[in-house]
Image 1 (cartoon, rainbow, N blue to C red):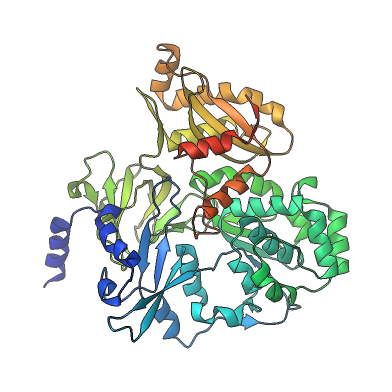
Image 2: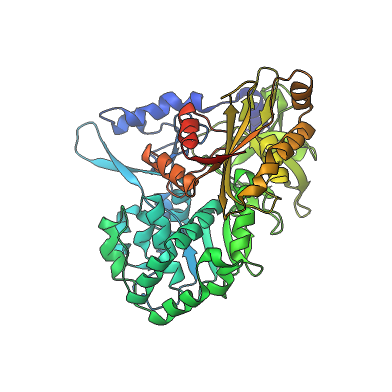
Length: 527
């Protein structure tokens, strides 16, 4: 068939899909027993290597996506990940990345052979492919260093969030030659530095004595960690002279004079962590975006080093764009060469892993076109349908983030993180913000509710009417949380069953009443 005819037939015939379209097929992986015949050639030919699980930030059930032909890429190549067993060699990269995966064995009909499928986050799947890390070879690599990584490979398998960060932080602090850091989200960097601040004396003692601290969840990896930490009293003395992270702005520049970049996703809800991250980093190290990635696929590559929310659409998969100002139908789909500057769209994907015109649920805006090839440049706006709903007005994720950025993040306070929910403890109801600060500039927050109301009213005229005319919404509330709350929340998400250590995130709007109660129980002051 002629390519043009095939393309036209695809566009006219294939309808939009959501995860519900694939759920009956994905359910076959969880049948007991799961037979190879039930899942072979399910979405694409063959059996998948991985099942990637979403972080279920919106509060629904997690979504699973089969990933095909990832291990064949590794196993058919002569390339193998470069590993080193010498803990004294120069270590220049803090690679704070979770590599862990669970596995399920799939039997054939006569029980004569089995095939292993791995459960993992998509960030782990992608990095394993990039570094040629076969799960079958994990055990033999546990006590080695991958490339120039600061921490042994075993550190990437620790499931407890605090322990994961402290072990990576310990090995990073032990290396004065550190030049870069890489992690999925920028809040991971902030969390790691704050845990180092809390446990600074213990961590420095470990560097001086060449020991590993007693931490929850590291028992099975302790041997691999202990053989790779070398006593360095001179480095420990230097760290004590510098002091803990909270003692001075730009602390990282003093601890790691060669550090020049932290690579992480820092757009959307993660942008709230950027000011505090930059305070720790100082002027000589920049935050660089990793790109726009999802569990489904990579959407965009980082485009401008000066803009953390600017991405060039990739050509790894077929991406169409659904005009959100029109009806949700294929008639509203635009090809990349048809989109308009300044308009907003929802990405629709056709992937090599078997998704057909799959609606991503994100909203992006066209902010330009690459002059070399005309490919659209996008910025992330928000999740569709992620909002706070009142009887007569809806407040979107974008409005909440913009208001918080303008009203609070510009104040002389160090915001670690925040989230929001309806606050209906008294009537009329309002928007309640839960905020955690680093430092003691608490009194500054007393001005924040009024500023938030002004900014939200500017962004959404319906709020002005509801407040001033109908008296149906009152001034927003801010509830200050005790130190460590958001880090504890990420561990809560992991304890609920998420396998996405390093990829768990805090929603802009809390999706469950239980989460609202959980945060409310950790409030220390209210404004």
